Length: 236
Ligand SMILES: [Cu+2]
Image 1 (cartoon, protein in one colour):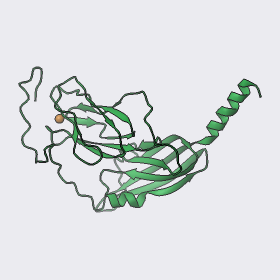
Image 2 (cartoon, helix red, strand yellow):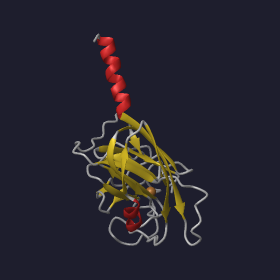
Image 3 (tube, helix red, strand yellow):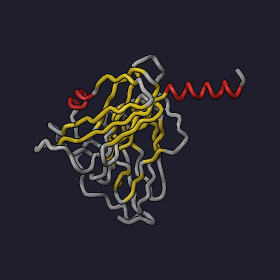
Image 4 (cartoon, protein in one colour):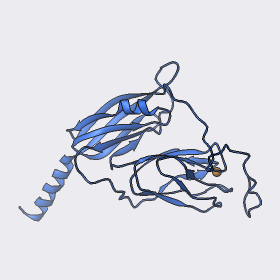
């Protein structure tokens, strides 16, 4: 076999080995139990390999960011593999903070000024709920997964995961307004056999979800936002 044909052969094997996965998630809202017709974005879907492959390691050289702009974390939901460093650029004219005191990964990047950034590396899988210690209404979720095969849905609930090696996986979901029990019930085994696989429509119920106000980083209720207008170049 000549080198060019060998390369072509190897490329064709790689192409055959990977699959393109598609699917859709629809939110079933309380109390009507009618399918959510509006925004189904930010639902995380991932395929956890069931074999003995080594744990996922972040390998993207691109910057992964959650911006702070207009007192909003953007994107609101982010999914990353274990080992990813996430930057939190502050693009507002005011100070911000980002912290998590929940079990996904505890961190606090401190109070930092307009135009600057901070970053955190997420080293274990889990759901990291992120807040700003100054602005109670700000929140984000970082879903850290131990796989390289993941996606977040668009507004239409559609997701796509490319380059998935064929084989058995556990399909799992995360949705901010679903209970742990609901999400566990949706997780299921799938075997990827074809070059393209459609996982169909999965309905996620909001039943039982309760929005509980979060505390500040000291574990206490938020008071009025502190006056940071005395810092140079800032405004509240
Ligand atoms: Cu803030």
